[in-house]
Image (tube, rainbow, N blue to C red; front, top):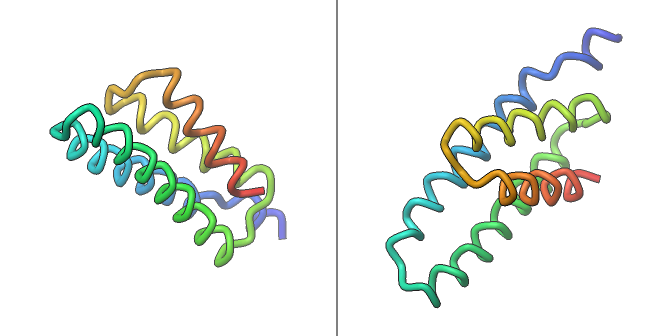
Length: 99
C-alpha cells in the first residue's frame, strides 16, 4: 500500500515530458515577432496546464507525487537553461492545476 503511494516514477516521467514539450515549443516561438511571441507564450502555457489537468484525471496524485512532478518539471527546465523566475511561475501554475 505505501509503496504505491510513494512510487513516483510515472509522475516524474510526466514532469520531464512536460518540460521537454514546453522547451520545444518555446524554442519554436523564439523565431516569432515580439507581438506574436507573447501570444504564443500564453497559448503554450495554456497547453501545458491542460496537459497537467488531463494527467490528473487519469492518475491518482497525492501530495508527494504532485511535489515530485513539480520538482522534475522545474529541474528539467533549469537544466535546459530557462529563466529561474519563469520556471518558478510555471511550476506554481502547474501545481495549482493539479489541485
